[in-house]
Image 1: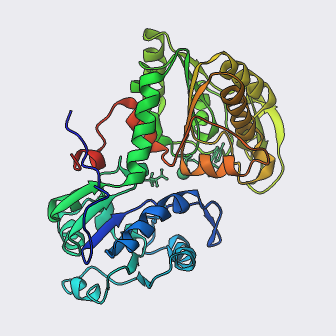
Image 2 (image 1 turned 180 degrees about the vertical axis):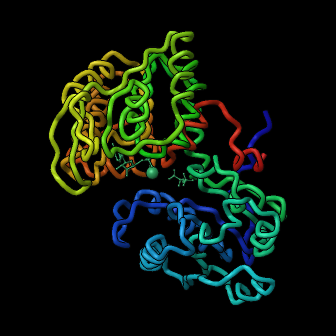
Length: 396
Ligand code: ADP
Ligand code: 3PG
Ligand code: MG
């Protein structure tokens, strides 16, 4: 396999314009940053490039804007945060990518930074548009992708941009992430248990079939589990479900049986009538039409803990419930504590990933330890699958 081109730390980049793709997609509530991990992990490299007197243009997305330029998904709060930390001139670009776009960046001096507003405000980004990629590429001399967590996306600032710029590299954070995951893949010991949760059902459900060949147990939690419950003909009230997944769930069960992989889905849950309310534990045959499944139940937690205790490797992405409300965070916290205890006291190899999974873990009052914490959720799972991610293959 071809090797990824990593950014050589000794490369002279003085006065060179670097387009740096980062994943600054952090959880926000009412424009307040709820978890800084993804930003903080990017800072040392930005500082290094400033020291090296490069001119730095940062690109990132935030969420998945549906309406045109949804203000709730502006990168402004992130801009304000990094502006406080980086001791240089840092500008925020809110303009359009028209034919004169290059002139708008020409004021940038050595050691200065421009952060471009949410790149997904432009539909061309998610379309991996040729013209848009060319405009982005024209802004710099060197492209660096330091966003492993969105390297599974075939989008302009991750993928086609590399066709329109002289040199493309992977950054040091991306390198650290894939080195750590490669090490785990190499060292993993059976039984291997994979826990998948969260709410990005369409991204993750398709990954499962190929993962089944590589693991011994699959535990489904979070909103992801709702689709499995619907498949089993349970009524899930107003819970989040993705349409038309019966076929894929059926395929997952079939392939699991062929590969001797055990699938565990929740046995009970905690429901509420609203996201910011209180919850009660219920069995799945008792869910009312106005209720939402927002966490796994106590019975399920015990079964998951047992499985973790029996495992030698655990891979986890996606919270087990709507952890943002403490009333529904118990499942996620219990899983985190159980993995941490087994990692610390025993010999469990544990890798956790995902922007929200990390945010959930950071809310814990106790110190938790894991073999590796990845910023990536969907990308982490696709990488584990053994897929050549579009954003990485263009760096080879
Ligand atoms: P990650 O960022 O770790 O990859 P996702 O983005 O897929 O994870 O999903 C995280 C989101 O899923 C969180 O906002 C969490 O509240 C939500 N979530 C998890 N379980 C449920 C549930 N049962 N109902 C609603 N939302 C849920
Ligand atoms: C993530 O949070 O997993 C990454 O930022 C990618 O986001 P996406 O699933 O919206 O592409
Ligand atoms: Mg997320």
